[in-house]
Length: 385
Image (cartoon, rainbow, N blue to C red; front, side):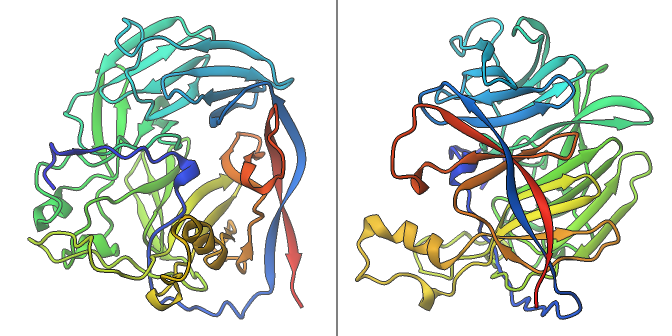
């Protein structure tokens, strides 16, 4: 895959259920601690269709959503009232284009990352400032993810972004690609530039140059000058300091995680031969001083539904067999035991107050609701045995 080859896949987070690997069967016998996610409150919104929660302003109790049309964004207050919205043609002078690659509250503004531009609006969606991305678009298009977040460098506020791929010039099936790779971008608001940051860690399997991967997707959290992240299809936790580039890596002790092994350097991905369903991390959130990791372990080829299962039932059958689970990394670096995640909701964001927000899963209710429900969740510590 060349850098300039754009592969468009509308990877709304509602469709993202994990994909990655391993023979990591760490027993976790040292601790019997685990966590559940429990509903503590809810927000009802009068909206017909699917919503994606993009960002939460916990100080003003405002919620930023993307609607059915990916160019439609709007603000909702804690009462569930839509107080302002943006829904204009993608070529309008103040539009961000057809695709919303990431959105966040930033100071008293709303920042939205388009395919080739970053726009700043007030809370009524009046355009305040914008500038073009400083390199050509490439890689995958991801919609609905937390790919634009505020941060700090030397006490100065900035934005950290994942635009779908690195600024590398080499092809993803070459060793040079992994030497050139950058995980994220700093958006320099003064010089209006996208600056590459965070190379592959020396411990990363992607850095070894032994196999190629067309799409390496990070899930990250920014807390002032510290970035923590994982890769969707890998089993390592990373911590990077923006001020001095200190870079730490450790293994996540998953109960099971089937790795996507990639393909040969200088080769091409084989999409025809049946393989295992790899494990994958679908959500990674920093909740106060803890990290919440939501994942699926994956399934071996002989565990996947066979030809006797109707095609329209296979997907739901796979999700039943490969259940979504969660683990919590404590501030001291220890990990909880895994536990199952409820099918009633899909975790979306965490806010500055440590409140976890999730969307109701419509497949799990027997009627078609006339309101969209957003749940406030909390982590509840429990002990087995």
